[in-house]
Length: 204
Image (tube, rainbow, N blue to C red; front, top):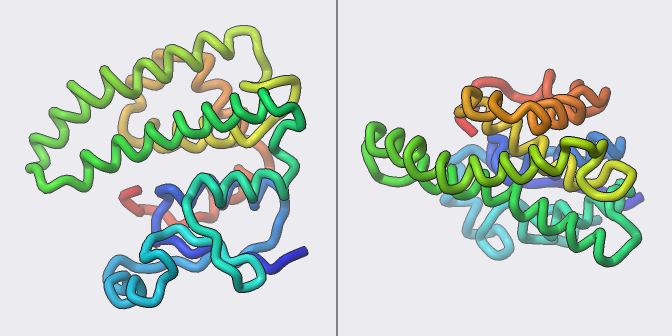
């Protein structure tokens, strides 16, 4: 098996899905974390100047979803059927947007009061709730999001819901099928173990 090193900031963010996939697949990897104070200097010598990066036997792979898709293939979490694989991609991109749209507001230069207002009145209403409604409806009579077995789409949605619960637990709790599905993934032994031991008290 190749030697893997994931390089990302010391947070969950867009690197966390890759960590979940590697953990679930029992795939050894080095979890290299970069502190924000170190980033200006490290950025100068980072291929592409962005994180995350996955080094595969020393060769860098960039873009978070390309990295996660690669990891998912290694872990056996991508469907063989071409159309099902595309639906997986669609759900994963949706899960990513939940995070990136939220982080964009949280990391803006606006006051905390303005951020809170935008998150509740814009983000929750226009971004989060529509996704929760779609997934909740889909999971009413299904075990997995795509096909008849777990895929990386299930991990991606659960990982994003994991983050949503930290900020909008009152909203997520209104969608029981979403919450139950996310909890089912989070209780998988390897995922449960990772969530218990990962660094605590990080903002995101």
